[in-house]
Image 1: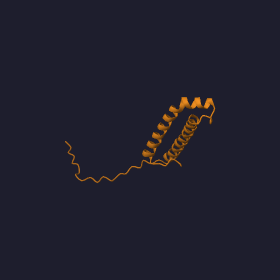
Image 2: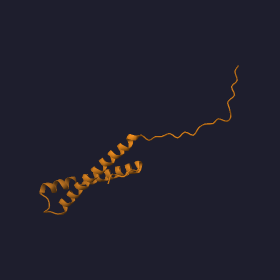
Image 3: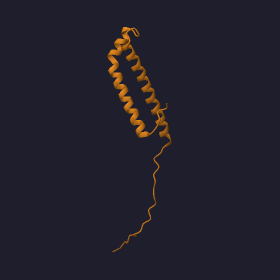
Image 4: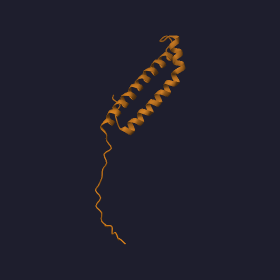
Length: 98
């Protein structure tokens, strides 16, 4: 029968893993520009829809009809994009390219 005695004092080196990858920075830049561009497009749509509804002579009947039908969806898109960009900025801690 073999007896094995384990050492009581084992020297384990301190291991610090490196989770950084060079291409993640590129993904963050691309995602931030896409989010910023989408937020600007939705902002312009919101301004056009609000102005078309607020000022009667500013836009044609077709534009006012489009604005009246879609202004709620534009508000929802702005809220979703704002929440997504906020979460992205919180998780990644990255500026949005402005």
